[in-house]
Image (cartoon, rainbow, N blue to C red):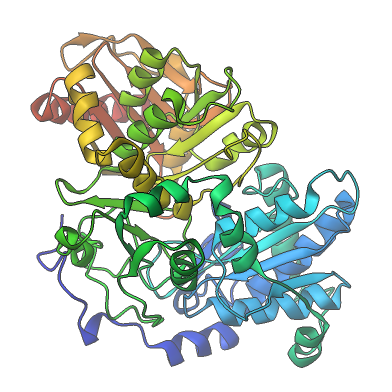
Length: 544
């Protein structure tokens, strides 16, 4: 249930006590035999809070040591690029990581400006460093919990391909990290911070990234059209990037909220009354939405800038699915003539079927994969994917010439693309979506949660299509029951059921005792509600 304070400005009682948070990071003693206090990698690294003993110095020291051992085993001997976002736990964790990395003899590159570093900037750096190389490969770490609340910390590893690490790496790293914690951190090589910091090399993440932007976005067209842009970093790592983008490329761009404050006291509360830097949430983006008339396009990013939120004067905050469909239609509809004619469109299986309709109308191949950006990495490297996107407002795409830009989500280029679309077509992304609705119909889309314990979640993750006995959903025959993604055959860790005009997907939450039901219907909100209700019955019957 939504909070009655959703969309209102945070008050003093909503703010995290940063001193308490950081003290808990350095003094907490996690129990390595308690699953809630172990190192555990989800789709975006290890996340937790020092206040819950799930993100403390022992976690980061052990995880970093495990990464050092893993990269040595894999023969990754190039530099390791490390960046951090603006969360209160990010700098302490960054400092711990440096001590262990240097203690292990790793060649570490940190930001030359001692600033914050978005996830896409680290991916961009790794790809640039490894261009044309088969040995001495670079990799990276981003210290961020992404859009999570201020009390959380996060730690992501990006291998030499530049994208999020897959389970072949993260399972090994997590296992070794927990092993080291059980051993009382014996086996961790570490040097004092002063020595570690002095031993690091530097890299101009911001300059390298911003200078390269015209090779992925037509900023010349944006400048020439005089597009008025409002960019809100939401107090995150992109804060310095947006000012630099405006200056270097001569854009009419205002950094709407240039403040960095690890309490995020300037944020409006999310749907549940928590501070969360979710740029796809109307509640979290309420302050920017209220100013939408001041700009031709306004955009937001989460704390590590791997997600985007697009606000237009005519429609407010766009649903991420809607913008993905518009971006795909624009990019593959002639805006990128140097891309391979065979370049594919990548979407996760919980993204809107509007994307399927757009792909079909363009005559372009569509690949539907499980949740997680890692599934797009290889295609973005070899150019076989022109675009990869998730319903959670994360996407990336190729350079103008069809080569790799980033292999992790890039909320900055997705935000700038909205201005390019307006500059080159004279219509906002939301107006373009209205055109798609007129052509293909107006889907209703939503996500709800249903209660499930640990055992039920494990059963859902291992479900087979044969476990589902239902033959009909919301008055329509079921056309498919999927436990593997149709695009690559990979297990989806749940279930997707489709009919001619609707679908739902159910996946267990990695952090809460719930499973998530994603659903969509081209028959409107009432039919969607019926799909959601029956989806719960279908899943509960399969779990019984």
